[in-house]
Image (cartoon, rainbow over all chains, first blue to last red):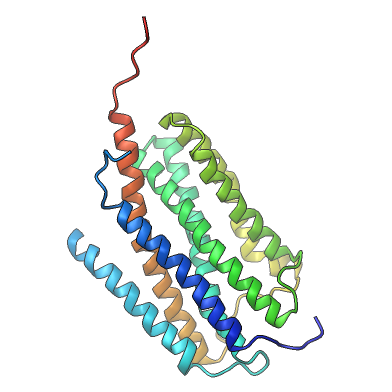
Length: 41
Length: 224
């Protein structure tokens, strides 16, 4: 906490990659599950 | 109408996110003190907002279940609780990366960060609790009580900086933010809210189908 800002674009790209990977995988998973027949246990 | 929402909602959400992210990553100017690392705000803040909205919906639906025994409300609570943990985790991870860049630490026992951690882990426990029992009435009642208790954390997270200060900044306002940055953040918040509603509709269908199936099963025969 010495007042120096680090990271820049590397941190931004890592953040966006993590966020959209998680949201994309979840979206795909729930979209697939919402189309399965209800009897599939 | 339902069909129009099924097609229109994902299209609107994806279009909003593409526009919002292009504005955030390429058009919005760098921040005076933080440089480009501040661009994490365009995902971190919308994800945190959606997480809190999600927890609020889970609590409201739980309340409805307890007073009306509505299975639709129970399914909505399950869907919203899970989505709150998803978006809360995204907000938390991005906040940690942003914190490392600007504060020099991944995490610190700041009031807002601590309260949000309790809320996200609490709702992760709520999901675990829902998987502990297969008996629908007991599962719904227990988890509804837990969700309502956890919801007390929502105003604590929202007002934590105002009440106790800390390293995390207070919510930005029109006066504290460049107009274009504010508009970009607004578009991303709107797009994330649409994405959330889309996910919530799909997850609700999964939860409701499961509950309907459980409720339609004949009671187990006692062995002679």
